[in-house]
Length: 216
Image 1 (spheres, rainbow, N blue to C red):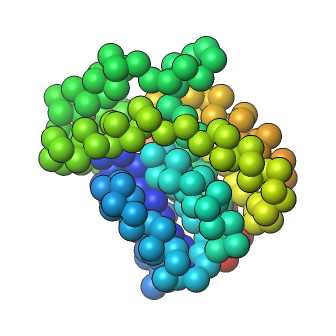
Image 2: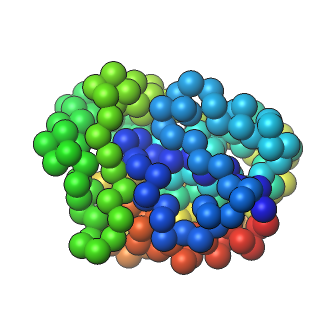
Image 3: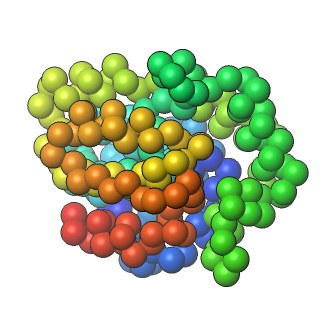
């Protein structure tokens, strides 16, 4: 089973410890730093085709791969995925103040429970260098994939199955992202998860695991 996992901003690979598919020999995980260095594209090209799983910032990169390499996508699992980081209303983008709050919060807690990871679950976040954190924040601030995704829909090339998982009150990746993605992928199965938890790989690992295996 070939699976390409694209991790979230500042996320540790342990965020996926509860998902069984990541332990399969054909699974490859790409960190957020590697994503900014073009490793995700190379990895997918090397694999030939794969189920692509993207969480948060990694979900943004997964959407970019769907646009640039739709024939290589065997299935797409989007977990709190963002076409554009935003503050409501009107997709106006994340303010510098909000982005700074994310950075300060991560550093102040050293990644431990920054997004409210429940006790007994793996810590999904990690500290990284200031340079990498800033690069990630710049990526989140500048990325807007809405036009590319609308073009993908019009092209008819998105012929792969899509699953979307999104918390109903996620304050990091807003639910509007999932509603927009429903219009891009009309046949997608969408699950809105109760609550505001962002770290869905540690909250609903069995559901993500089942979605991946259905596509493999």
